[in-house]
Image 1: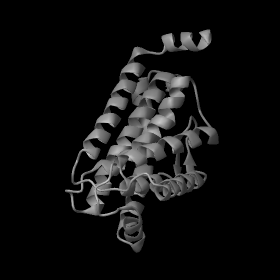
Image 2: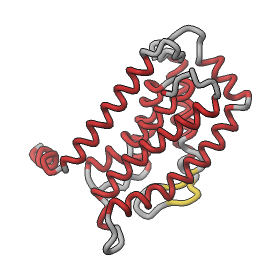
Image 3: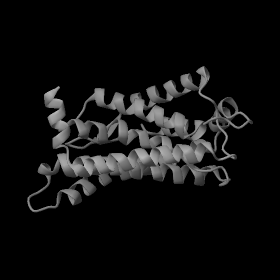
Image 4: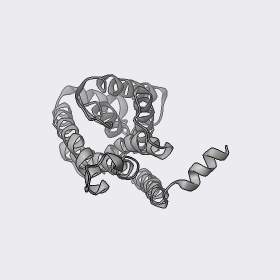
Amino acid sequence: MSDFLSGLQETPSMIWVCLSIFLIVLVLSIIIKTTNKQSVGPKLTTKTLAFGGMCVALSFILSYIKLFEMPQGGSVTLVSMLPVMLFAFVCGPTAGIIAGLAYGFLQFFQGAYAAHWVSILLDYPLAFAWLGLVGIIPKTIKSLQIRFGIGAFIAIIGRFCMHLLSGAIFFGEYAPEGMNPWIYSSVYNAGYLSVEFITTLIIGIIILTTPIYKYLKVSFMPSTTSTL
């Protein structure tokens, strides 16, 4: 217990500030979405939870199909973020964030690169929780593709910021001699996340134009306003 408390005291103040900002952004995002009278989405029913579990499981399976793997963590996968993103897009940010957190913990148990307990939080549950914000874009934007694109961009930027913090503060020793750790972390994480974002965006937009999305909409988006 004393080791844990001393670890908390040694955690850089910047980390606490960033974590606080992250939590505030998530809470405000959920409040804004849930108070929007035009937002429509399913309640957390058994059916919705089962759908979420399937999406998390599918993301986890796809994460094993790695097209390229980085030396200190991170990889280009076969659109492993997409199932969780589609779940958030259909079911809203509250359910999406929960699914993202669950997926993040599974990623940690799959094979973690950890330098500190805070780096675990940043690189896994907090990073993937951002995927849930795909569902925050208001339905006043009629185009499904544009809504998904904006939401996916917010999600990947949020995930990037979490990895950026972890990389610069806890993995800065891997930066080439004379290179600023923040620049190193930015280049390192942007390299694989940009590819992940582009492939996820393309496949996601394609799916939105197929009967797959229409089925999900009918099954999980009732015509009455939900609590999500």
